[in-house]
Length: 115
Image (cartoon, rainbow, N blue to C red; front, side):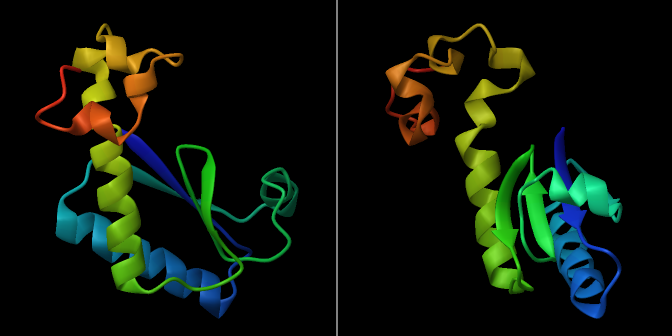
């Protein structure tokens, strides 16, 4: 299951970002945990200068602005598709090895030998 963090202290833009991300996750029926991070020390650990920010599996993907719903959809679809073959049931596959050349988009290409 993915973890999506919304970094922000509770300002209107942070609330809007959380709402957009939640709507997209629900619309796409994605299995994800959405965590709201409001502690300034924890937010600073992500090395961002302004909020809101969106973090997917500990990678900052949006910072300092409210994303559009379409942008969030594209990010989540892309992020989930690129990591699909490296799910728990496929972790022994060659493409899931960090040093594998196939760990990129080719990993999820149906014509690929990977997974």
